[in-house]
Image (cartoon, rainbow, N blue to C red):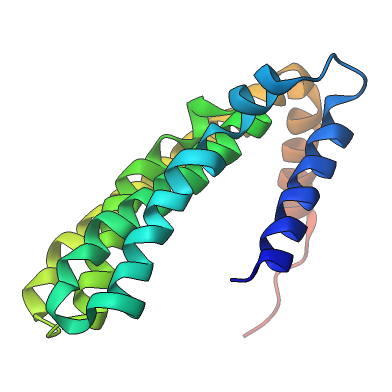
Length: 167
């Protein structure tokens, strides 16, 4: 990455933050409060990747595990900080370990036994993401329970009143 790309990404993130901030006070404390993953965790993950791909090479394959974990955890933390949704983003930390191991598998000697923990951790993470997302969606629409009741009544009536097709 060159300086132009990095400065473009920083300005883009800053613009999104200011747009979402909607008039609250803004200063260095807010930058560190909301962007600590982008300032500290994500660059460290990228540093481990850079060490492997640019400097050390195949001898340092183990650098990809912490690199993948830190980068993914940094992205998860950044999303959670910007949108204040820690309650729904925590399965991303399980996924971070799976991604670190997957990078080790992909760029390493492709030991097939690594796929077992990778698949278990990925499935577990996705299961928790789905479970908490569905729970969140349901809890937001619990106030509109009569709408669901009407939809179910109409669907049930349509099923009962439809003519059976001859087979």
